[in-house]
Amino acid sequence: SAKMARRGHLVPSSVPTSSSDPAPALTLRKEDKLAGHNGRVFDLQASVKDLSSSQPLRIAAVGEKGGSVWTFDGGARRHVRLPGTELMRVCWHPDGEHVLTGSAEGAICVRDASSGQTSATLQAAREDEVYGLEVLSEEGLLAAGAGETVQLWDLNRATRTSLAAFTATESGVHFGGLRNPDRKAFVFSIAARGRILSAALSDGSLRLLDSETLQELATLCVSNEAPALATAISPTSPLLACSDRAGGVLLWDLRQLGRGPLGETESSGGGAVHSVRFVPGELLVTGGDDRRLCVHETRTAQLALQCCASVLSPLLCVDAAADGASTRLATAGGSIGLVSDSNIGLWRLGAEQEQKRPEEEGGVPGAGEGVCMVCRPCGQ
Image (cartoon, rainbow, N blue to C red; front, side, top):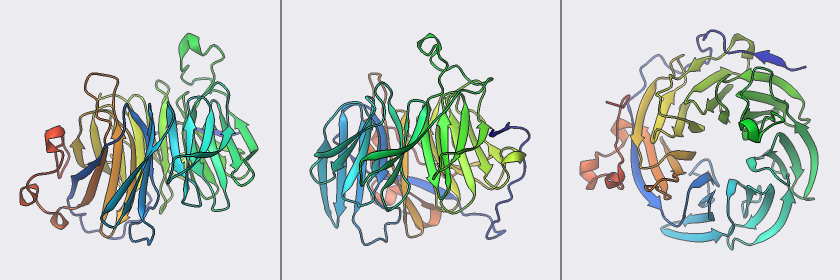
């Protein structure tokens, strides 16, 4: 059976640092926005992770009232609509020409990124939402989270090859109350790197599996009081992150899971953290109900806030791409209230001296929408 690893005491990070010199102050600057969505945006993904690639940048986003694909080719910008409703998750097909969308009706659709047309539909569930999509290989292996399961699909044959179902931990959160009489533990997010696949569950746990066999390797306790909402694995170091609906963010070293978390943020009381993403520089970007885009360092137990920016609506999704010495971020979200921003925000994260002052550029685009730029821990 899988080993249960509780939070325990925080331990010093064992991740090596490249230099003892203090890191330069960071800034977040909003550079542009993409309009075209109606309703909340639940997920987005960039087609490339490094903008030095010869491939043009594309951003796919999905939400309450369908989805969109934007293509940036030189100075040109093209926009294609993805029809549908309640599209919960999106990721890029390995061929770079299609996107995969997961719906609230349990369907995974393969869509042409240039036309939006659906070429194939994979039925992952009948009554449950698809809350996780992660391409595992260039050969077309896809991991999907649907209901209380993680599934492996062969995209070339449009067939499911494996399935693992979860049961809630005894001390876990009973998500849904009377609407979930069987106390199911639903998958809300998945992430993968190599043979490790992580799944954030509604019972407040994070499950680690072998991405090839779906054998469960470990169960980490994120919270006994709130569902785990998002998970991420660093592409460059052995770091694993997870957030919960109470506003907490935890960080582990995959090599030392038994020692407990390396770090943990203090909940600001602002509500759920819906998205976590590792970006170059061993930084962790988070977004949630507190309407802040936050950047944390990952070298200390405090996961100290390096910079943040405020936005109009709760942030539900974040993605990133390296761009030389800086990082480009795309964010989105929205709310069911009277004030909801369904635009995709485009940001640049970099060292303070590398970026122009806002007044030198005539102000930060979007500043009138409630955006603030802060170079050090904000909230003051």
